Length: 211
Image (tube, rainbow, N blue to C red; front, side, top):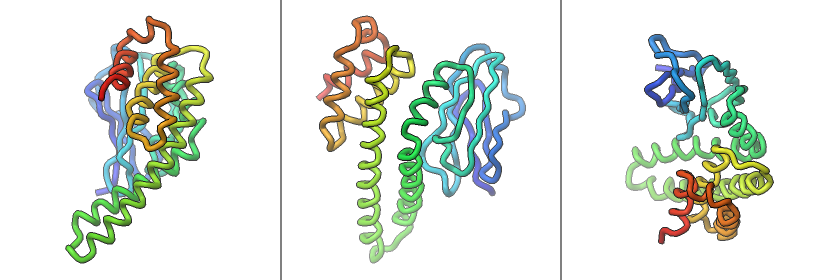
């Protein structure tokens, strides 16, 4: 059976063939009644454990293009503000994100080898996996610094902006680079009271106050 990608949502479903770069709605999918967040995910060898965020609404026209299994870095053209923001952040860090996704694919393959390995070969494979994940962490920190630069440069704080801030708070707390958490906390502290009290603002605050 060929590898494929599909979306995680009850509102609609998309399928991506691993052999062709096209995306089509599955038969029988209900018509969207409001703006809906979708996630295109990949299944099968070669797909990293990541997804492509898609926003759709009634009457919207969305063009998705890309090649290969690195769905996260595919190009999405849309008139929906959240999608434009997503692509803006993606384009800023695309080179490093592509490297990270490639490492994620290797991680997935190596992890499966470890699961099936015998006692003699497993230690060497685990050592390779540890080295690979250390490299992933380094690349992820670079992406985090890129996103923090974008967050700081933004003149307006959209819903997507608040979501990226939350993600940076969630992951920076566990990074070996302590400056990432400091920079993220500074961005949060500078928010107006209304944004701090929003749903995503409260989620970020919970990260900072949790021990």
